[in-house]
Amino acid sequence: MKPHFEFSAPVWKSSGKAAWHFVTLPKEEADYIRDLKAGLKGFGMVKVVAQTGDFSWETSIFPDTKTDSYLLPVKANIRRKAGIEDGQTLNIKLTLKNVDVQINKGTDMQPINLMKLVVGIDTLEDFEAWQKQDVVTFEGKKVNTVHTRNMPKQAEEILASGGSIYRIMKGTMYCRQQIVGFKQYETENGKKCIIYTDTKVIPTQPLPMRAFQGWRYLKPENTPADLDAIASGEARLSHAQEEQALRELGLLD
Image (cartoon, rainbow, N blue to C red; front, side, top):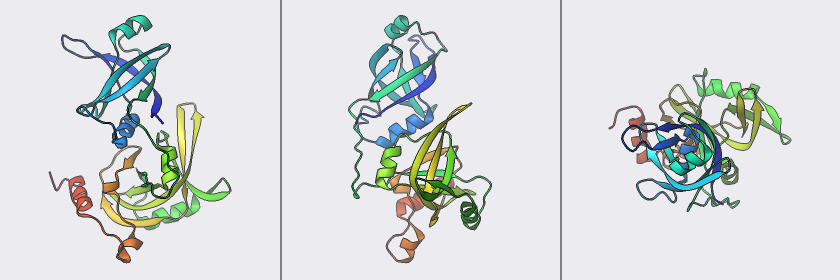
């Protein structure tokens, strides 16, 4: 399956003699592309097919360190044909070429996990107490909910792989809950998403983390082990994770 998604963003003109026109991808889409990892050749450039209205073009998006995102070039002939002006917001459908996403229902698939801050709660004990009060029914099961703005593009893969959402309190990742479903819904301010999780809160090896907005994908090499696995000797915080934790705290360059 070729990854594809839709978003709205304004066209802007670069400074300089060339005066190229670009669209900056929203952060969620940029994070999704980075996490695919496959097919990223040529200094991180990714071949795509872009479409706005009745007009489509092939090009490559490339990483931009200034915005921590990807830039989509809008070709001059497309701008002329579609009557696109500087600053105009475009509705864009983007399909990644030479990249395939396999949705595998087997048990060998590595879990795709998310992480998200918990605001207003300082300890794991308080979080567990809060989750016991925030219980709803989803597909006949008692679950907890996480409310967020953006629906993960890899929602199907997260569910197929048995992924979890790891929770961060006061700058430290303390626990996870397995994700059991997603629901996207419309509001007056646009689309929002509910992430449904199992009610069981699983403590993990504490891992220092810097603050960020919304949710993010949690890279496998940064995923802490469950405390039960550590206690039984099945797992421990790896050297890479220890090093990452120190970097997050600014103690390593």
